[in-house]
Length: 296
Image (cartoon, rainbow, N blue to C red; front, side, top):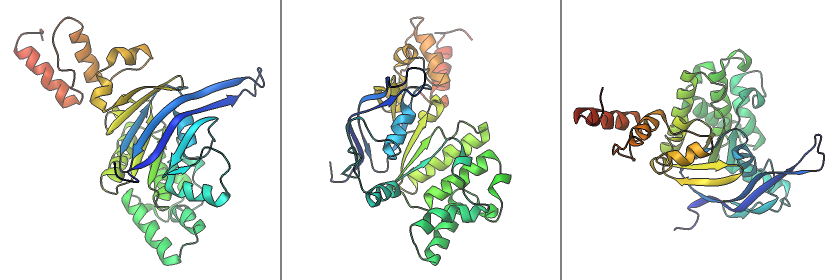
């Protein structure tokens, strides 16, 4: 593998919280022994149910948390020790941006274009460069016409686009979406997923989508499934979602079409385990019906 092909590398990565509630001082493991590599330009989905540890992983990758075990390298730099200088932390966070579930937590200004300019201004960039970045980022997320609007008057989906534009304007190499579609309606989710795809395919940005939606994970190049703080599956969407029984065992499901084929296969009928998209699953069902293997 060529040097620098790997942008993120984790070796035995773990994080343990200290209970601040009734059992004060007790250690609560949230992530344990996670080993993974993320390539530049990869579209990765991290899948798991609520409380599985996937959001803890996101916070570790963005240096919001410091690992309590294992090693984490961002662009070759060991960030595990927690002893980085402020300049080093700032440099890493320029490489790895994060979009949170609630965009209100990321909006800081009273005008959209000023909000998007906030990050580049903190980088000390010339005014002309800031203007170019703001215009380019707003155009990329389809929010140019809202540049002079107040963020608090926008819809949830529009706010999320502005939050993404603010990250894009920083020119990161990696963008982590931490349950970023969870508060959106179906149209907003679809728009955001389209933006993720374009950021990866057209802009070459490494995209990591932390989600519990199967259909979202199926759009990625690669899927990692986390359960109880540990990695249990890692592969292409077709590889991961062919393991329907293993997903069921940890409280997850495959996309709907794959689930239907799994039920049919459970009746002793041979089905294509690689079928995943709606079109592929419909084609398999049509062929089975045409051959008389199943009744309409």
